[in-house]
Length: 147
Image (cartoon, rainbow, N blue to C red):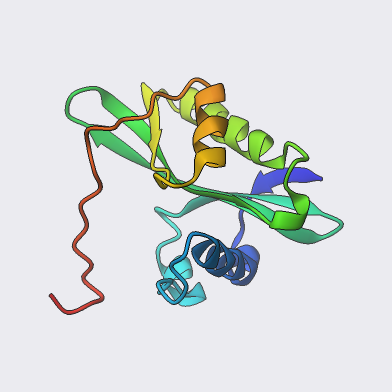
């Protein structure tokens, strides 16, 4: 297994894994990203893939942000490993690689979200030094859906 930077040729497989992730967290049918939108947005799309025997079995997607209280940050958008490959430290390796990227780019922090019900993920992140914020909630306005 090795981890590498995602390339445009990986987009169809990444989307399939995003759909698998959406089903895992109970939101199937919510994925609207396409290969075309990923290609169009390459300048801001950042990702890593975990690959074994030529098959992509996990991914991490992220972007850079600026927080008015702290400065430059990396936002980890998604981290997912297929169920049959879990327990082999693949998620840890993806996470650690994203941390390395954040540090190398001069970020002062890394931020992400985790589902309140996902105890395994919360434990995974706390073990790696994360502080879970029970105060703030995500707020979204989705321009692809009618208001």
